[in-house]
Image (cartoon, rainbow, N blue to C red):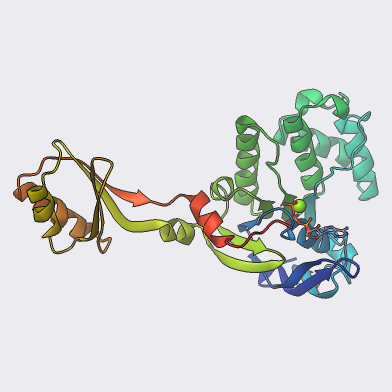
Length: 316
Ligand SMILES: Nc1ncnc2c1ncn2[C@@H]1O[C@H](COP(=O)(O)OP(=O)(O)OP(=O)(O)O)[C@@H](O)[C@H]1O
Ligand SMILES: [Mg+2]
């Protein structure tokens, strides 16, 4: 099973639809075993196209996609048993129940009736649909349908889970449910590759993120590094009393401070970002008799970061 260093990887993957859109342009990505990797990009970036190639629903124009080292488009039978996928339209019949649908699905996978029954009970419990196993899927809420889609994806115990926009359209509780499930899958050793528009949401589960724009990978990093990258070296300070011209000049004279500007009744400035300098600056202000009420780093948000990465127009 683990006959490759990576659970999945693509090599110079390119996809052109007909003579038109170049949906993927030389995409080479790597997904380590047991990792949660977020695949981020705006509408039309090529996320679903990549996922469809990995699951052999589409063939690439050139390049390769591998699952556990096996070419997903040349030897799909060998790769599909390793993958569980949730892609855009779930492809279930509204009038069937979860038990009926999964029984059919288990038979397609060549499982024995007894094993199918046991596995259905197990997966429906996992996705909190145990009480709904004989109800019509058509009557389910969006959150329940999504959880059922995940049950279907994990049914044949794959080791790689590929989720296309798993939280799209879900309410905060629904998003949290899916997030918890993803974290549990990782704990069990599964690899999870998920696409999304939402860096903030993905950063709560993923180990690393890949940013795709107009079919090209524009950045990739660990979530830890992304969070470090958005921490700026600007600091804001508020004082008990309004600063006089003289006070401002005294603060300005503190050596470690640069680019000082008055802001929101206080000041904002740059420094080298180290905790030592931060303590030194604060002490300097106190010695000059200034009463500091707040002293805090100015942080960029994950959303700002996402927008700065996707700096060109993105939409197509
Ligand atoms: N079957 C198709 N025929 C022609 N063009 C297509 C087809 N499917 C996708 N495209 C185009 O390929 C590009 C990438 O589409 P894709 O669906 O992979 O993007 P995406 O990142 O999943 O976007 P979204 O966030 O909207 O789901 C888009 O420009 C899209 O219009
Ligand atoms: Mg898509």
